Image (cartoon, rainbow, N blue to C red; front, side, top):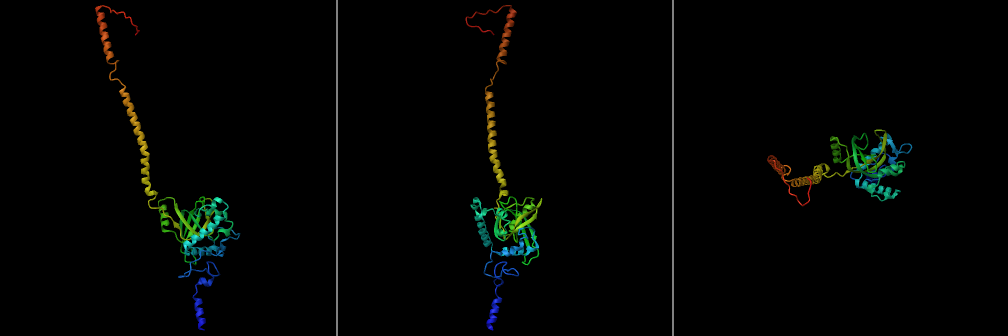
Length: 330
């Protein structure tokens, strides 16, 4: 009898995850929760059956908003991704994307570093094959243009607040990826708020995040409804630029540019003025100090006129001696 009591006590004290059959989404009933104080890390893998409600009747991954039929899976994955080890999630995402790179038919794509693998393009090209990306961990990198803070809505996982982050990757051709997460770095939120307060476009570079691809998410655009990959992500990472950024160094850059531009211009002006002074000095040196036609010429003309007047008064003539040399008619 004592043995039966001891056995019942031991079985009753076993963690719920062990008794329920392991992994997220394994077994029936309520989803397994991480047991406080458990030494075993939470598995990165989520059972494929968890994502089955995401598929619409025709097997497509494309739908608007979060439908009631998929809400349970939505919150379960968000709860799982906030509790799983971020390093393990990044490694699982890298392993999956390495496999996708290896499967590419393009030799140039197969040679790319995994950080440059075009996840957005590969996902779009395989959106009609849900088994490839649905529920798989992926890592995305790019710049953020929009951050929306919103209430999580009623759920069984204690999630109160959510953030919708619009990330634009280098291969997305101006089409966003929508990341939904339970937390965003405080610095990223402050930067987005600062840019909006200054009436500047929100463009925050150096943002990355890992999470599970959930579906193609419909959102209203200016002309029509569009669809973006919806990824339920863990904690985002932001490589904040150094404090001595472009804005603070801009005055110094402008000053250096002004000096560099002014030096050749100043030299050109100085050279032109020097040449101008030289030409003026040269012209001044070539001008005679007295002009014969104004000074000596007028004196000689006056003397000749006086001589003629005296000769006329005396009634005599002027005798010219004959010269043997050549004559020049004036």
